[in-house]
Length: 393
Image 1 (cartoon, rainbow, N blue to C red):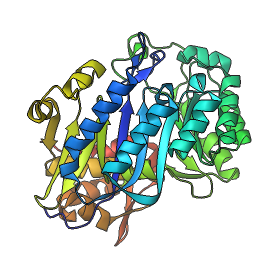
Image 2 (image 1 turned 180 degrees about the horizontal axis):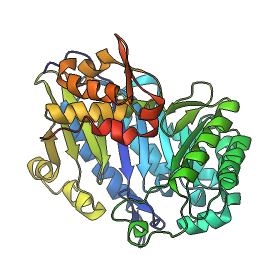
Image 3 (image 1 turned 180 degrees about the vertical axis):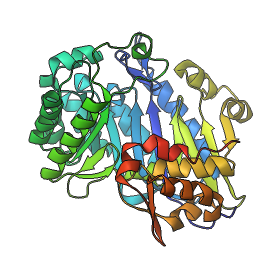
Image 4 (image 1 turned 90 degrees about the horizontal axis):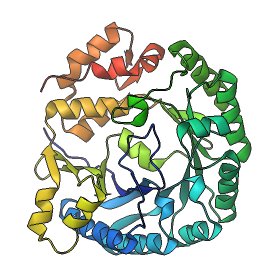
C-alpha cells in the first residue's frame, strides 16, 4: 500500500439537536429537552478540532458541511463564532463551499441573514414533501407553506445555492403525488435537489412499526424513472444516485465523500476519514455519540489523553479500503477513473480484479482501459454490484 497523492480534505460538523425525532430518522439526532448548550458545545467542537489538527497539518479544506440534527436551531451568533474559530485554525481554499442544514419549521429571517453574514453560502432545506398528509405521516414539524416560506426567506437573505431534500416512496404516495412534490420544488427555483427513497432503517420507529401502505418495488421504480425524466427535462443533471443539480452546482462536499476523499469529523457521533502518506495508512475516527458524553469528553476538564481514549479509531485494511471506495464511487453517474482507486486507497487495481470480472460477467459493470462504469442494470441493482466487493476480513 502506497499513498502518494494529495487527497482533498473536507470538514463535517455535527450539531445533534432537533425539535422532535422523526420516525424514519437513523441519524444521530436528539430531541431538545430544555435548551441547547450552545456555548459549551461550540467550546467542545473547537477542542475536538484541535485534537484532529496534528493529523492534517499543512492541508487545506475544500468544503465545510454543518449537519445534524437541526443546525438551524443554533443562533447566528453561535454559527458565526464557530466559523471564526475554524478559520483561525485551518487553511481554507478560496470560494470554500460552506453548507448548513435547516428545517423549514425552525427558519427565521434574522437567523438566515446572520448565517449568510457569518459565511454560510449554501443552505440545505429538509423539506421531504410538500404534501400535508405525507408530512404528517413522516412526523415532520413543518407544513408545506412553511417550506415555501423557508425557501423564500433563504433567497431574501442572499443565498444563491439552495438544496431541497425530498423523499419518495412515502406511505400511500402515488406516482402522481411524488411527481407533484418535484414540480413544486422545481417551481421554487432550487439549484440542487436531493431526491431519495424512504427506507426503513434499523433502530427507528418505522422499523419497529412499519407503515402498512408503502408503495411496492414496481411502483417505486416507476416513481423514480418518471421523476428522473422530469428532472432531466427541467435541466437537472443527475450526478449521483439521489443528487441532481442545475448548471453544474453539484455539492462539492458530498462529491468528496463519493470520490473517497478525506474529511475531519467533529461533534457528537461525527465520523472522520484521514489518509497519511507518511505511514501509508487510512484511519477512521468516531466521536462519542451521546451529546452529554461528547460534552464531557471535550469539556476542557479532561486531559488530552483521556479525550483521545474516548475517541474510537481504527485503521482500514485492504478489504475495507477496496469495498469502501467502490461503495462510494459507484454511486456517481459518471465513469470512475481507475487511477482514482489507486490514488485514494494506495492499492494496485489487481486487488479487485476478481470482483471486477464478476461484475462484468453479471452485466453490472462496464470497463474501458481507463474507467469503470455501472451499467443500467448495475445502477438498478447497485447493492448487488457493490456487494461483490465486500470481502471477508
